[in-house]
Length: 182
Image 1 (cartoon, rainbow, N blue to C red):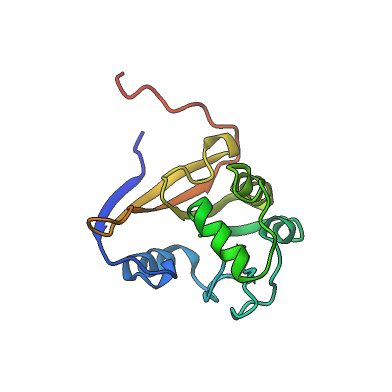
Image 2: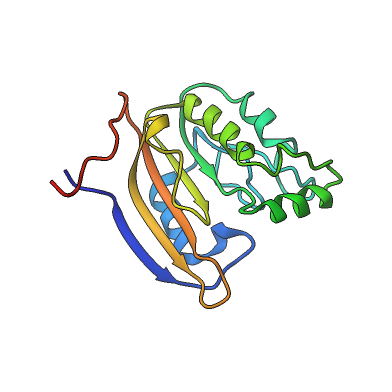
């Protein structure tokens, strides 16, 4: 059994992660024309067919809470892009900037998990998820997603590394990670 492709690059951070050249190249390889893809935290990106961002100044067709938005998506998505705020502080700042009341749920681990649960259910078998953030968790095996590629973006001293995790949805329940020791 072969594992995911693992790559590490040095690059400057960018508030809009998709503008980082290595991330842009990764997205170009997997997303194609974006048909059937969803992006609940799209920012300035127009890659996905279905796009949302709470910030009304972004060029998105929808500006609502990500969880409420993903629940309206059709089943059978080709893929999902996930580039949410990475920390509780980023969530609070983002919500305050758009005059949205920040709740305990918004700054809890459940904030993103709810969005991931719905996207996983709406993505077809064989579909992809590309998750970006400060952890390499992605959607995970518990949601039937296997790693295809992991890109570690190292930004230098004083910056957390950004992880880009590409996963494919299996058509069956996945076992726990095999024991690599043998």
